[in-house]
Each structure stands twice: as structure tokens, then as C-alpha cells.
Image (cartoon, rainbow, N blue to C red; front, side, top):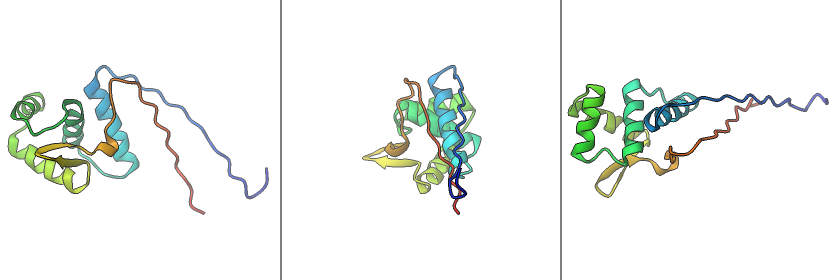
Amino acid sequence: MEPTEKKVIVQRLKKQENNLLDMAKRYYSILSAINDLKLTERELQLVAFTAIRGNISYSTNREEFCKMYNSSSPTINNIISKLKKKGILVKDASKIKVNPLILLDFKNDIVLETKLLLNG
């Protein structure tokens, strides 16, 4: 191996989730960690829930989230505002949705390829 060649290390990880919501939450927690977004547990729950339900604008979706996670409507509004500033949630017409750039179909298995590059 020449001194200028870099060794590439491949590590495969596998995690099985019980339902779509858990799968979405795991995916967004990985995105948060890799991109240093520092999302809280409640923020991850809201993003995952919104991704599965399609939006968080309908009152039935908000009520279901509040019941599921023992939260309140003002808390949801604060989280939405923060996540919109970070570009994770976007307003599409009159609906608040997950940014399409990071929205996946969680009904399928997901394979993530991550490259951590050393600069220098």
C-alpha cells in the first residue's frame, strides 16, 4: 500500500424495528446524529409521526400525537417552529410536512450508506 492510499473500512450494522413509527424515528435519529442537529426525543417523535401520517396540520393528527406522547398543542407549535427553521419540516400549501429531501417510504427496508471522510 502506497503512503498516499487511504484504507477504507466497511462496517455493516443491522437493526430491526417493530413498526413504521419506530423505523422512522430510528432513521431521523441517525440523520440527527450524523448532521449534528441535536434533535430532542420529542422532536424526533414529531418528525417520525409526521412522516408516517403525511402531515401534522390536521387536528386529528395533532390530537393523536398529543395522546400518544402526552404532549400539548402549544408544545407541538413550538417544535414545528424550531424544525421549520432547521429545514426538517416545510409548509406545503397549507400543510406542515417533512421535507421531501429526507422523507422515505418506511414500509420498505432501508439501507443507509454513510461515508465519514477525513479531510487531510
